[in-house]
Length: 575
Image (tube, rainbow, N blue to C red; front, side, top):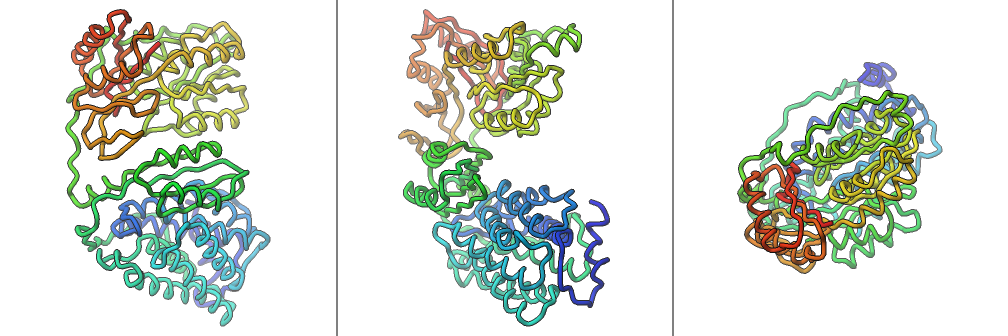
């Protein structure tokens, strides 16, 4: 970080002198100080408690929210306050994580609305914007609860209005409101019995106080840089809290025709709790807690495109924190890469760059070393590592597109959660980019089998889309918690089978689940069954299972290929 942003406030406003107006670069400097101060203390926030669901990641979630907001203005020279705050609000919404992160983004959203036309601000404008931020945050929560970040922001805003009436000095306003914010924080356990029982304050409120403290300290003249500070050990006793809280579900929804009030009402009707919904432009940020994420994601997808999907198991977070979680044993202890069943490395491309430029390039997302080699052997030009739990970003995909010499590029996302990022990368590139909406790796492989390196892009796109629809995908993994999906109740440690993403079977052993999954998918109606085994499975295990599959489906051709994917012992292709 340049010394200019760190020293701007102390250099422009010597300690002890009133500060009557701030411009956009002053706000940028204060926001950097807030970001740095929260970064020093976010682990302390993590050790606190969030209402109504204990969530050990509140500090991290708020820090990620603020980090994304900072990235919007990191190199922005604009001196207009409204423009800077507007970008902060947009970045915070796009990066919002967790209940408190979404609420914080709504505070910024309200402030941005009030300050939209303000080139500079004084105490009155800042106080009014904070009040508007508080009101916007309350509206964003389905059932506002006092004793949370909402309360602390509201009381801080009220104190700011009072301070603005007394003095036209922003230093006075910040000092006065910081004291009020911490007093409000100290009262949160009295407003929420669950906090008092746990011996903590509200973590989201604490995070807000750290942000406000960072700005206040910097306005005093303190130099605050992003260096790690000492973390205080939390003294919370969470042993008496309940053991299960379900899932934390978050996503961005692109739907300009839908109001946030309507979305909130429908989430409540689905049985969601701790609902926070915020909207800027045509982007809606959704955060909800529920025992089953499926209905909420399906509802969001029915309204428009989903992006930045996060589903966290809060039950496991809590159990780990309480020392009660014991992960299921690994299915197999070693991974292997067997050359006899892994395609040879692709030959070196001897075509000159000018010849390549006249051809169509393919960029494919792949989850494991074995799959990398499969795609390369089929002619893929660039591999982007990613898949379940490790979705590549738009920037990752765009970089791959820009780094091939060809001017026409086809992207194979090979995961339903990567498709939108691929489309965004395509829109951002100056090249002509086509996205084949492959939802699974087997679909991507089928698409590549239809790819003609000598053909033009339009012909290839049509052929590849047709080929991908002729494949069904099965996957086998291990349940990490007790839950009910698609009317099937599973317990932690159960082996589960999914057909095209839908849970259809469970069992105690991988082989029995694979066989039952194939039966339920009517594998006998297909010609080829391919078993792609993951990084926790030995070749011998895979070959033994293939023999069982052959005995069960004697008319089908069985193939065994090392995929190397994590989390899924087997991915199955039916063609």
